Image 1 (cartoon, rainbow, N blue to C red):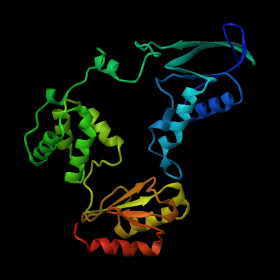
Image 2 (image 1 turned 90 degrees about the vertical axis):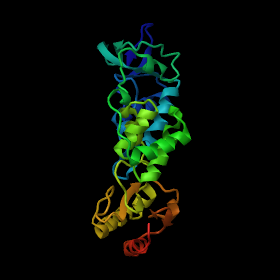
Image 3 (image 1 turned 90 degrees about the horizontal axis):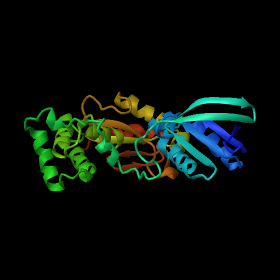
Image 4 (image 1 turned 135 degrees about the horizontal axis):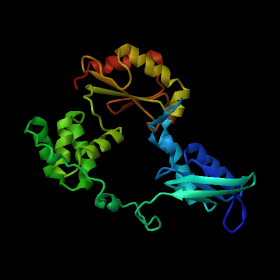
Length: 293
């Protein structure tokens, strides 16, 4: 419990706005307490927002934590203190006095809309553009990228669309292609690479002729999806995320395929195979092994 400057008691200080701190703040706020949630980083969420999946169900991490973060930031009984550290505290149980040190942001947090213009204009952060380092020699990949960009425009808003078309053209995103996109759109390689690595629809490695996607969402998981995945891995001698030596198959795991009632679900080249079992795996593999890409 803390004591405010005006002498009022009854508020609670929660230090650390990871998933545990956010949930604790939410529980206390719902119980009627005024909560001061302190986080030393500029944003809340902690390590969980940096994860792709959660153990053991492989559910989407952000799908779980995002609603909690939004609710905490909007709750009337929660006051967020981000980019802030506890400098000192004194008192006794039920009557603590706490001093917080808020780090300088150089922006007015009340007026911030998240537009990012301050980042672009910051004199401390110097972005090294790809064209300042080197120019790529034209090759098959860069020429194909140029054709795609010429038809899509060089605005940064077209980045995702361009990357999707490049990924579809090559089956993955070669490094030279990523560098060419960065060069033509006047973006840093790190920014484009960060976009590519964030979205699972993009691949940085060549994929097989046939893509096998095994759903590992909760509904499929409890119905034996893990066993189905292991059977595919054993039959093809490759782990999830890998491609067979002959380049025929790539195995991927996904969090949800939108047909939970048919779980376990496997999708191969966009075709759904519901109610999968271990005995069906070899038949699915044989069917696509005979098809031409």
